Length: 515
Ligand code: KIV
Ligand code: ZN
Image (cartoon, rainbow, N blue to C red; front, side, top):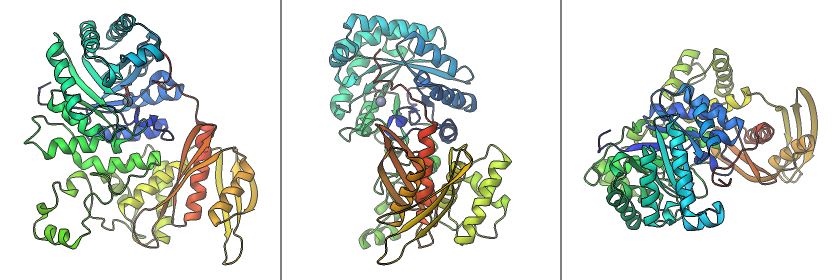
């Protein structure tokens, strides 16, 4: 690979999924991976194969369906983890095992309870084991941001000798500052005798809001892989955001001597998909993918942009996939127009039955809302996938009475394992009454952590997209629902979250579990 190619390693499906409440199903992971492949992401980290049978299946499904990107699985520096990763990646066109062990004094002493020499030994053993199973092996020094530089030099030299082809320097706790982090990368590249035998990578967390700045500083110092996520999703404050890293490199060729393969046109649709799947809305002022990223409110700015776009814009909204918000479909649109517009949005169906189900929902929506936008279609498809999935609970009917001066009342019929059950409840508002009625049936023993409503487009006939997050003894699940009636959207989202609760199996956390 040429020295001016910057490898984009996306870890939305692994580190991104470690955001509390952001877990994804196998099908959702495959759908996102297909978008990342189309965007020309070089490496897709699909999960942590040993974490649970569900994680294994998801890594395997991504490895089996993605052909143009390398698919990677995380593994601790343990034989069983590495074997499980290799097994999940067996069907990949190009697979990578990513193995890691902590290298900072605080992690070695308190978490691993190992001496530095033992850590080096275990790292070397793990890299050799991985290389015996696959040719593309990445080794990460967890908490490198707080590790001693002399120790990093020793362990990295040994890992490269053992066969690591990529060396990743994670700022696991988001502690680094750009100049200092760049200096660490420079020193590693200069001091490690066999540094030229591997690609150096960075993986920055955003605890101080510096993940992208640190990643870009590292690129200037010689790093040639950046690990990042769509919308900056990730553990705690998240990871470096892919869209910001990629557009930073692209917009400032006067500063950066590297290029990525990324096709930015896919950035906004992929951001929306990740937001819909996880239920994490994108903040309006988020760079590149936020609703306001290209909106000019002040008269002076609007005037400037109309006269000459570059007065206030350094990128073109269309280049990163923002469309003009045109009306795309309506009540009279047929199945072919529906399918063709979805194909343009990068959405495909696994079966005709799935397409038919989504098309039926489209017709229902078009009856209620005459102008259908791309955003409506995206919400509708995700809703159709929710309602088409195997469910324990299904919302059959909902009737709500709400009148000034009276307490709202909701009557709900759910099907539970195929049996219809009815309940009614009052509440402080129609949504509260609906959730209480559902709870009378389900008794989920959960706490409502988050309830949010987003208007998908503007106008009073807009669909409301509702996100519900439930907490059951520390385990978070997210549910989504879309409808032009926000109480129905809320009920759908609540039921979706309840289904997620019953369908999930417990998983290990990569950094939480002792090595
Ligand atoms: O933040 C981190 O250190 C990680 C490693 C497993 C690469 O996610
Ligand atoms: Zn991380």
